[in-house]
Image 1 (cartoon, rainbow, N blue to C red):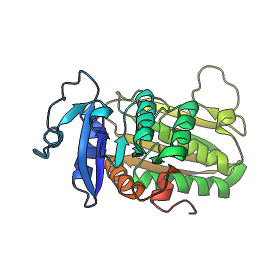
Image 2: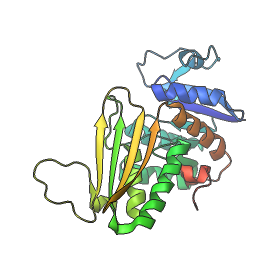
Image 3: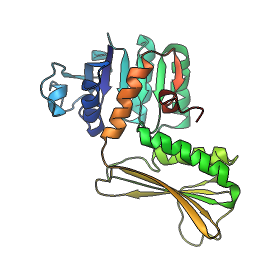
Length: 270
């Protein structure tokens, strides 16, 4: 069995991850932690997730639960994630990172730590369906080519802190790579005012925030006289949490280094 600890255990994602870990046949919940001052400290991790008492109490900080852990699952905040990775490296504990909003420098830091000290799965979206979407968009962009304009629209709940979503950015990167472009150069994240005609190479990414939308992503390939739309709609956070549990069971058997959900799902060469 793989001993798993969960960061941000009292959050919406943390609770669903705990649920999936407790129901996975290869995983054991060995620890759960929250930030200092959280009202969840001292409470049973299973109880707050609606699963009843598990005997695992939510502790303060990663240091309180890191000993004896095999894998840390983290869907918290980008600055916290880097700190967790540094501690995981010191203890040789594998990581599954679903945190979004990580900067290029932060990802580079985590990658360096992983290559030296521990195996890590990092993905902006752990849902199986979304990772299939990534590959479908890559294939569609390669086939349709420059004759089709690429636009991405993403929608999430009003509490989401980063925009565009990590998933939308990844979709943009997959399309850009297939078209021989760099999203850093061709990505347009907002439009306002007299902007002139759309350029041939740009990839637009637009953001919607409202209500309790779990997550929706549509990629448009708009050509002359037709368009292709590829959409994924999440109606439950369980999709992300289930993927995280799957990744945790997988990463515990891998050598140190950086991996993605493509590796977990054997989609790397799809």
